[in-house]
Length: 157
Image (cartoon, rainbow, N blue to C red):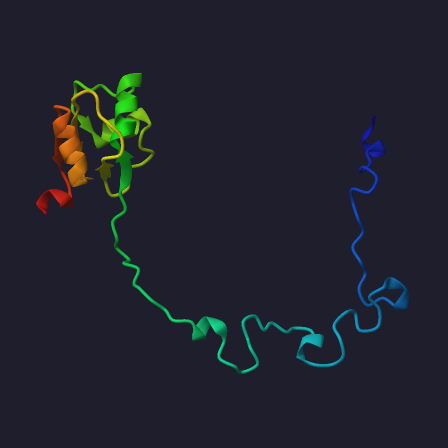
């Protein structure tokens, strides 16, 4: 096989329909644009315009507020921490900080901090140091014999 012998598979490259090139093309005369009017002309962009009627996107109510400086936390469940401790990726004997969670691969990036939620069970006692945690997560960690120390904004609350 040589470079000059390379060909596309038959039917792979379909030729585009040539619009407004005579009656034999199947899209002749007006080229599928109808007769006269704004949309038959070139250079027309009327997205969302409804002929002077109030457009739908303006008629619908706008609700709520998106806080521009909102904090977003990386979320970790207790069940996942337990799984990583059993697999040996996290050492339960040493304090488990946010950096340890990132290095183990449980958290990709800590964003504004790590928040622990109570989904799952902890079998071994673990000493956690994180930015935030739910009340039920704190109770579950202490019930398992560990401790959960908050180091962020939630510690002040």
